[in-house]
Length: 244
Ligand code: SAH
Image (cartoon, rainbow, N blue to C red; front, side, top):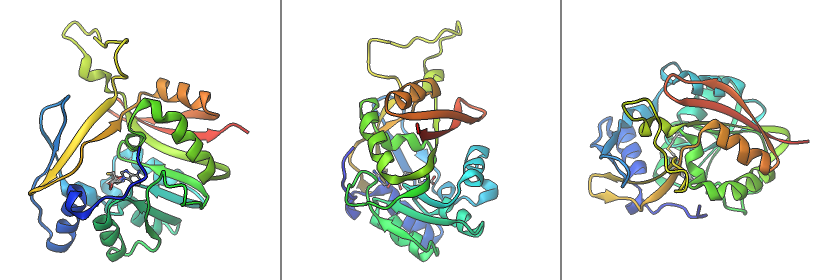
């Protein structure tokens, strides 16, 4: 969990977003991980409109209220949908290329800022973390630091809306049992690296967290976790709010 911004020559997702916005076509946005086979992110999906969004995201946008922070806003798809619903939103991202596209797309309040940068001191009523938004926490041991940071960014009565997935299905055997090494690292910690054309990003950690584990860490760090909705494939939307 660093405080850094991305360099343009190390920003494959931002490059893909920028290409799609400017030329309406893209190359493959490739995703590598030591834990999985190579995969791809369909770049067009990063520009999804409200009606194309999964139900967990639609629900989050509907519940978002007051002054909203869209964390890791990417192309700005959620920020745009919120603006269209007459809501007040500030979109942040560490990618200069994505920030540029968000501005061009008409997102009114866009900042190139890292969520963990203490210089960023505004406060919000809703903090949105979507598209496996727990990923930005990186690793399970970053949970205390994450919740401390959230306390500083939330107004009284404010809350976080975050989606994530329980990756246990990846460990399911034919007999229906889950074979997880409980003495090893938490099973939702994934290392990723992306590539777009010849632009290769630095490897990064992305945390998928099941709801029970999230709730446990939340309560140990002064937050109450509520399961708002479950998706169709081990995914869910959670609301996190500080104890009074
Ligand atoms: N929310 C968007 C994009 C998700 S991809 C969507 O649903 O389509 C994750 C985004 O988070 C990327 O744009 C990445 O640049 C940004 N990001 C990663 N770490 C961040 C951090 N610490 N602070 C702010 N943004 C971050």
